[in-house]
Image 1 (spheres, rainbow, N blue to C red):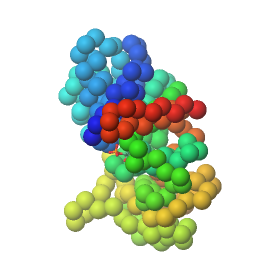
Image 2 (image 1 turned 120 degrees about the horizontal axis):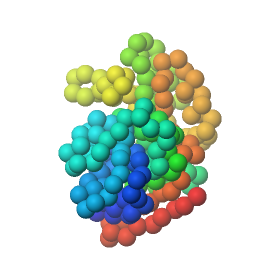
Image 3 (image 1 turned 135 degrees about the horizontal axis):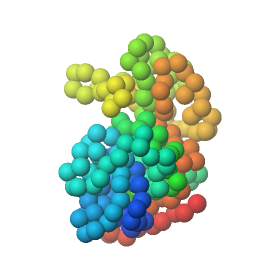
Image 4 (image 1 turned 180 degrees about the horizontal axis):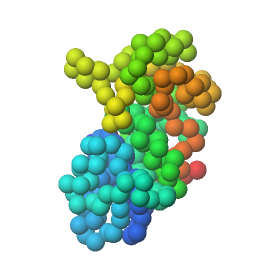
Length: 222
Ligand code: 5RP
């Protein structure tokens, strides 16, 4: 918790008055939303767009002004977590099931700061099963197509029922073991009919802040 919080609080230092900020999803992004709530109470004037319903509800509760994506042209800065980060600035995201909105918001942002603890830094992507958002219609067929790319696909469940995203879709967690060519695989997976988006973020992050257990942080800038 300290490591995630340290990274989150460092990232919050980049938020300035007048900015429109994208709020990520997950247990690391939770800390950045908390910090921005505190900064807002202390006079920071910013507006935010949230990447998921839980982040939206938390921001609202903390008094952060929310805007809709349709009301703005661009986001100044988005701060979000990740499940894996490799040395080439590629990410796996979607552990919390919010990858589609996260990617839409990240790609509308001038800057994307990724915050994480040290456990998320990997040599090569793929140990963490890749989350893929798919439409409900024909999902059994889509799972079979995904398997043909060399992964073990598992439909994400919530109790007895499939997990449903904020967009009304399902998530498949695809166990690849390792991903040799993330950029190519990213494109191929997104071409499968039924796939809405996959959790690889290629070339989107502009800064990575890694927190350690002792509360120190390491910043990697492109
Ligand atoms: C949610 C995400 C999260 O950023 C990712 O799963 C990391 O989560 P956490 O900060 O809880 O470890 O992509 O869809």
